Length: 147
Image (cartoon, rainbow, N blue to C red; front, side, top):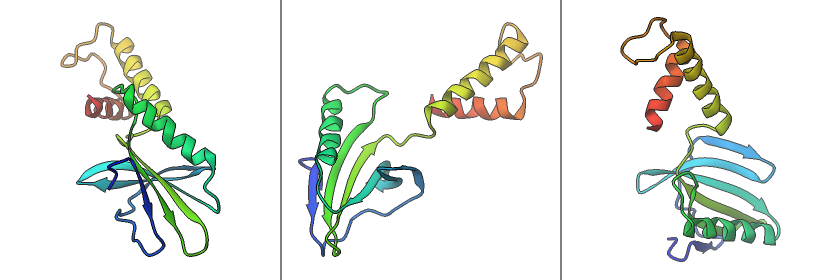
């Protein structure tokens, strides 16, 4: 579907994606989780009466980021423009990977782990003088999943 990374769908064309949970929202759209070939991707959708340069710039920037790929930067899967019946356009961008949570949560969890480590002195996972709090345990489990 995204051979050239940009697809155009007509009024009668169905969107071949299933909307999952909301990952976030803002003034420029809503981001949902969806799956492509069983892999979770982020699906940013917004609606507009005009095809603005803003949308095209966002797609161009994401495509440029793909050429300078880094493991901590999202990857553009593709985008589409879907003409709606009411003379508007659905503008959508698909990216991967899907974030588990935002940077502030990650940094908070790292702080919790450091707090736990510092409280115990020299830190050994199997030899803890002070048991972790429930919040510290949860942070540790979350960080293990990212590994």
